[in-house]
Image (cartoon, rainbow, N blue to C red; front, side, top):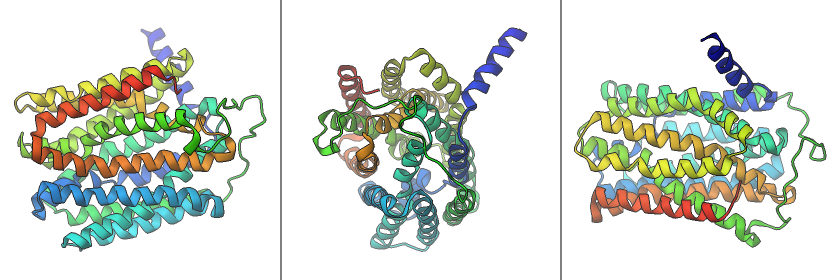
Amino acid sequence: MFRIFHKTFRLYRDAYSGHPPAVWTLAILTFINRFGTMVIPFLTVYLTTILGFTFKEAGTLAAAFGFGSLGGSYLGGKLHGYFGTRFVISASLISGGFFLFLLQFATTFSGIWGLIFLAALFGESYRPAMSLAIGEHVPKNESGRSFSLIRLSINLGMAAAPAIGGFIAAYWGYRWLFILDGSTCILAGLFFAVASRNWVTKVDTHSPEMVKSDQPSIPPHRNRRYQLFLLTTFLMGFGFLQWFHTVPLFIKAEWGYDERYLGIMMAVGSLIIALFEMPTIHLIQKAKKINVAIRLGLVLIGLSFLPLFFPASLTLAFLAMTIMTVGEIFVLPFNNATQINMSPDKFRGTYTSWYWMTWSLVMIAGPWLGLVLIDVIGFSAFWLLNIGLIALSFAINFRNRFS
């Protein structure tokens, strides 16, 4: 028994050790920001059940976040070249928080669309700068662990935020979600501005520890292999993102479970990631089974839709979320690291912008197209469509070893 405990302790210790101070700063900033993430998980529920918009209208409004994020991803990559990491991350979070705070006062379609767009345009422009900061401070062969640490911070925050947000929405009203979300964004930006003042040295790209990319030094629009990687990311991301838009709506509208259960369900998923992702990633990297892990993760994300075909059951809802979460653990940290590892140094900023712009396209297509299709073909057919898209992502991944 002691031996098992000792091995487990060593596994967790090894998984968390060796990260540079800059990565820990980014992790703390991410935790502060995500601890207040209460608007997006409940946005489509808020738009349909509180403001009375139709599924199609709610999808169009939620897609505004994707359009803003698309512009923000491009803007963040460009601004990083002019102003550097510190300015882009701090300014992005502070301005994004301001627009989230204002969103509570919007009630018209155009007003809500505009403020969601601006909140994403400014608030999401920090993502490319975050990825580039990791690339600047971490050798490529360690980037998977570093991205996993950032995701740990995301999920520690998200383990609490949706659960707290669900109870706040149910008992105090949605207005407080906008206040708390905006405030934590601003607090995260101020923290980073102070904590990053003494950042020094980038990773020496000529050091033996720095694994050189074998990718040709060409821009992404000429790199067919990178474009295929972005296609697999889009297909997987479309299905994955349904768990934050159409699935919560289905569980409330069709199965009858309110925001309290939705928040707890999301919190359980985040808690699983917080407890198990870092040691899992550490073991996968040591075993050099990254491609196997990604494929297994895609299979699990696809399977997570199957419980939704059965009659209403809280047990099945939690089971589906658990399956999706385990799949997410296997896929997302390595997917985020792959975009850095595939990018030649000369075009790293452009490659990173393209990657996050792909996720922005997912944020546009996911909620809007998802809700439109549900209106036309219904939930069950839409779940089958998502399984098919993820299967296609698996097939492309199987033929191309991206990681």
